Image (cartoon, rainbow, N blue to C red; front, top):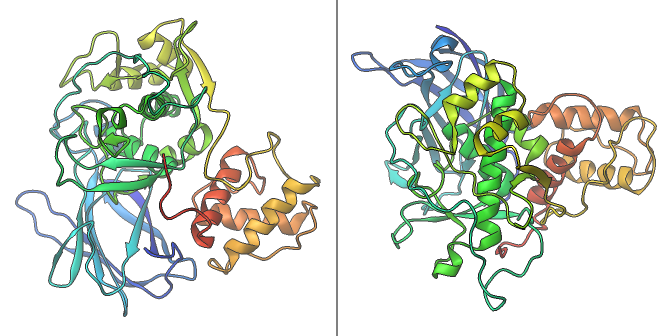
Length: 423
C-alpha cells in the first residue's frame, strides 16, 4: 500500500457557502472478506468548510499504470453531520496512491433530497467504479461530425460556446424517470475525466483525454443533439451514448488543474466543419474502436513522452486542429488575456479584487484587499489563499485557470447566476 491524500469540503447546498464545524467521519470500504474500520472520527471542518491534510491507504501506483484485475484505487465512506442539516453519506470516494483527492459534500436542510435516496435520516450517494475497472456498456459508434439542423432548429450560434451549465440526464435517453442534473461545465468535465481515466497517468495523457471529453461535450452542445430529438437535456450519463457521469463523485488535483487550464479547448477537423469533433474513444482493452482514441493507448504514448497534440493526432488524424471557444458564458467578465501579477494595474485587477472581497465574506480566511486596481503583495497573498482553498497552484498570480475559478466561486457565493439557466 501507498499513501493517498484527501480534502473534504462541506457546503450548504442552497447557498454554496462553506459550513464550519461540521463533523466528518471516514470509514474504509473493505474488500471481500475484510471488515470495515474507522479511519478518522469526529473531525471538524474549518472556516472554509474543509478538513485537509488527510492521509489514506491506497493500492500501489503500479496497478493504475497498466490494465489489472486489482482495483487501482481504494474506496472510503465519508459521513458528515451537523445540526440543522440532513446527515450525508458518500459511499465510495476513490483514493489513488500519491494523488490529492477532493470530495465536495453538499448538505441540505432538514428536508427530503430529490437527488438521492433516504434511509434512517441519511442522504446516501453511491459512487460507482471508474470505467476502466468497472463494467459499463461500450460506446455505440456514431458519426464524428453531425449534420446541423436548418436555421429553424435550435442552433443559433456561429461558433462553439462554453455554456455555464450542462444538463445531464442520469440514465438512458428515453428513461423519463431518470434525474436531470444542472452541472457547471468545468465540474462536468472534471467529473467525466475522474470517472473515465486514472489520475496517476502522465500529464500529457490527461490533457489529451480532457480535450477529447471537452470536444465531445461541446459537439453535443453546439449541435443540440438531444434537444433536436425532443429531449430537455444536453447529454446523458450512459457510456453507450455519451460519457460516465457519477453524481457527487470526488475529483483529483492532477485532473482539476488540467481541466482548469484547457476547459475551452476543442478539436476541429478542417477545412469546412464549424463544429467541435465528436471525439469518441474506448479503453482499448475491454473494447476496441478503430480510428478512435484508446485510453490505454493514450497512456502508453504519454509514457513515451508524447505531448497531447501528438497523442490526439495519432488517433484522430494529422489534419485535426485545436481551437478555443472564444466566449465563456456565465461569468461576469472574461479573462483579459494577460496574466495579472504584482505590478499589474487597471480595471481587471480591480475586478479580481472586488470578487475576492465578495468571496471572503463566505471564506473569511481569504484576506480582504483594497479595491484600487493595483496588484500589490496584499492582492497576491489573497490570491494565494484562494488558490490553496480551491486546489490551484499557489502562484499568487491570476492566470487563465485562476481567473475562471475565482469567477466560478464568485458567482456561486453571490448567487448572481440565474437559478434556471438556459443552454
